[in-house]
Amino acid sequence: MELRPILTTLRRHKTASALIVLEIALSCAIVCNALFLISQRIDRLNAVSGLAEKELVRVQLTGIGRDDNDVALTNTDLAALRALPGVRDATVTNQVPFVNSSWNSSVQMTKDQQQPTLSATTYMADEHFLGTFGLKLIAGRNFTSDELVDWKTFSAPNSKVSLPAVIITKSMADKLFPGQQAVGKSFYSWGDDPLRIVGVVEHLVRPSDQGGEVGHEYSEILPIRTAYTVGGNYVIRVTDPSRRDEVLKAAVETLKRNGPNRIVLADNTMTVEALRAKYYRQDRSMVWLLVAVCIALLVVTALGIVGLASFWVQQRTKQIGVRRALGATRGQVLRYFQTENFLLATLGIVLGMMMAYGINQLLMGKYELPRLPAIYLPVGAVVLWLLGQLSVLGPARRAAAVPPAVATRSV
Image (spheres, one colour):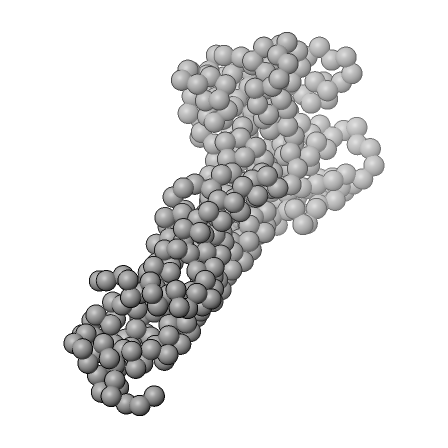
């Protein structure tokens, strides 16, 4: 198709053309970045935790007053919980995933290293931890009973107790020992003595999902036997997910009977699946908000294209009639308006891509977001090209239906 008549017409309607180009550019810039943010949030929502989430319930306690017998009370708590019908295993730990706080520690490869290699979250665990959480051990072994250290002994002033073992995640092992077998190697984290790796689990997320795309699975599990007063977290694994509510209710009643000077924190006592849903509630809301913004922008852009194309068809009715009288087919008139829209959309998309890059640079500087992957630019371009062609189709079909007789009518 000859482009000269189209360009001549667009030059005569500079203001209207510029407004459509700007509208398409803004839509392209915002939609590209919004799609990127949506994909990030969805990846975060779907991140693998490593836990048997559907089988886990969490009970959190807090004490009233001083309890010098917390270790013995914790042992009786665990024995009672493991004896409940429908319970597969139970453990106590200092923290659980999907909360807004975590125990973190720097990790060095040598004792005198100035800058840490990474920052890892620290789970304190007994020999029931892996089985209760449903973690998959892909190398090495679990802790043995003689490797466990009591928290009070380890944390006592001037304590000389060292930790004989540690279990880490595959993500952390790959960072510390790329391309190597991690089991049997050591690093420094807690205390002045090296920690020897005895096992590697496939996945275990940080409680507060910190550390970025890579570091969110930098987790270490230490053989420290804690009491309920350290974090207050009892985690119970059920034999059947359908019995979670039943087991949770029985567990709360059991713990209340076993220690009257304690309070069950109801807001934090729930299934781990519900805990995850609560933790990611804002992310889901953000996804829907960004989706609504994208849809609104595309609708406004489509309406702008339809409005402008309809206006131009009305203004050029006699011109279209003349072309039809001179032999132009309906298909040629249709292609004329579609090509005109394609040119405007292409100009707007090119400008929008530059604006999308600029917006991403601003977000990177202000909110530490990662760089916008290049794939989102052609995706945004295709969406807007298709939107433009669909939006102009109605007015273009009306233009193609103008009869040649219109050319003989007086204006």
